[in-house]
Image 1: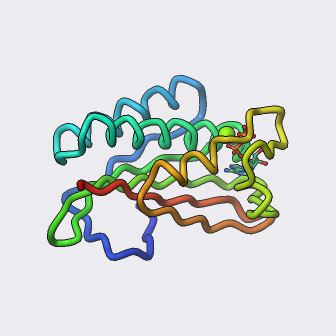
Image 2: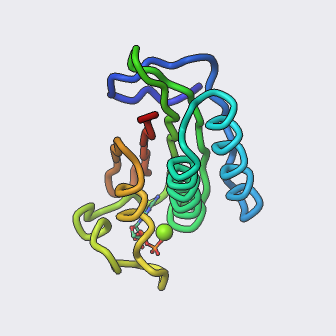
Image 3: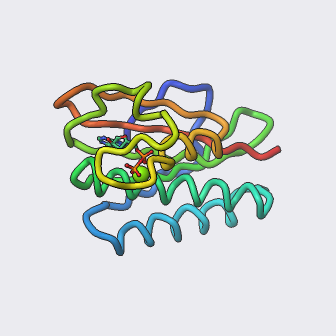
Length: 145
Ligand SMILES: Nc1ncnc2c1ncn2[C@@H]1O[C@H](COP(=O)(O)OP(=O)(O)O)[C@@H](O)[C@H]1O
Ligand SMILES: [Mg+2]
């Protein structure tokens, strides 16, 4: 089961799912995202790096703040261009104050507090669904230029 996301992107082929339960899984997410981008899109090297960096930060948050979960990686199209959609799902505590969470430097775990805000800047589309006690789902897309 993959997570439906409200944007104009149409899936191309199947989504790949990577469980996130440990540090090794964060590395696997990075590898999966890069491999799919290279195989199925014309994302530039710079855009691949932005995508993989965002995926890495979001996977780390899923692990650290969400208590683990999963990543879904899906090639999408808007009819003209292709892109890579990454979705992160956890059943953790949720993000209580989203504005605060997106503030550069805000962290509840002694991190740098730049992951969420940075990931949003690196991606073209970025959506968060979360509520206190109800987990967090973040979906983001990087499009070909
Ligand atoms: N999946 C998540 N579940 C719950 N809280 C989260 C999640 N992702 C981010 N947060 C909250 O947003 C804050 C900011 O995230 P981020 O910018 O990545 O900073 P850092 O991970 O360095 O703390 C986190 O400290 C945490 O409180
Ligand atoms: Mg983080």
